Length: 158
Image (tube, rainbow, N blue to C red; front, side, top):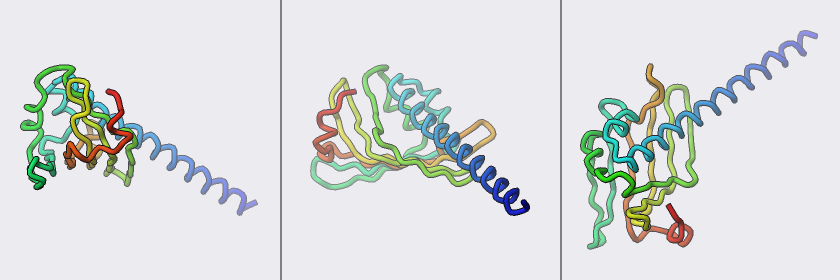
C-alpha cells in the first residue's frame, strides 16, 4: 500500500510538471509570435513590450559581396526597421522550445516576407526570461541571408 501511494504521488508530481512546462512553452511561443505580429503592424510600443528593457538583438547578415556583417542593436533601434503596417511578415514555421525554470529558448528557421514576397530566410534564436509581467525576450540572434532559402521556403506564402 505504501509503495502504491508513493508511486501515485510521484506520478501526480510528474504530470503537474509536464503540464506546467507545456503551458510555459505555449506562453513563450506566444511572446515570439506577438513580436512578429507587432513587427507586421509596425507598432514600436508593441515590439518593445515583448522584450526586457535592456534586450539586445544580434544579426549576422550576408552581404552581396558574400561577407558576413555582424550588428547588435537594442530594442528601440530595432523598432525603427518597421514603419509601414502590413509591409512585412516573418514566419518561424517549425520553432523548437526549451524551458528550464524561468529561462526559455526558442529557435528555428524563418522566412521573412516583404511586400508579399520572400525577402530572405535564416535562423532565429530568442532567449526569454520569466518576469513579474510574464515572459519577455531578453535577447535574440538571427542570420539574414537572401540566398539561404531552401526549396520549401522559396515557395512559401505570407
